[in-house]
Length: 71
Image (tube, rainbow, N blue to C red; front, side):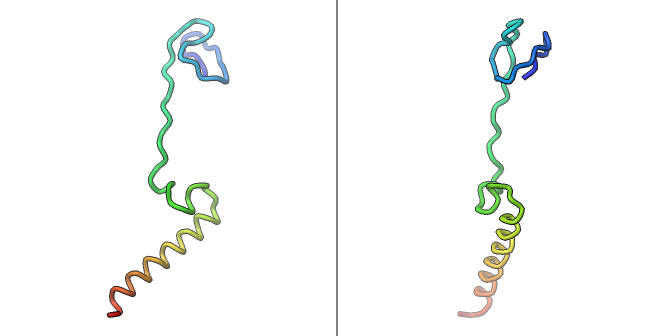
């Protein structure tokens, strides 16, 4: 983190700059997007995401086909 007042940099996140005591605004962690909570998308591995998309499409088509097949 770099202090905007004195320019001191640190690898740690402090509420106050250790050199000039400037109060820094710490950025809050952003929650994961909803699609990142789905199985296959949590690790951001390309082959897992591709496999998950194929399986999700297959499941969706199976549900739609079962609704219109009359069983």
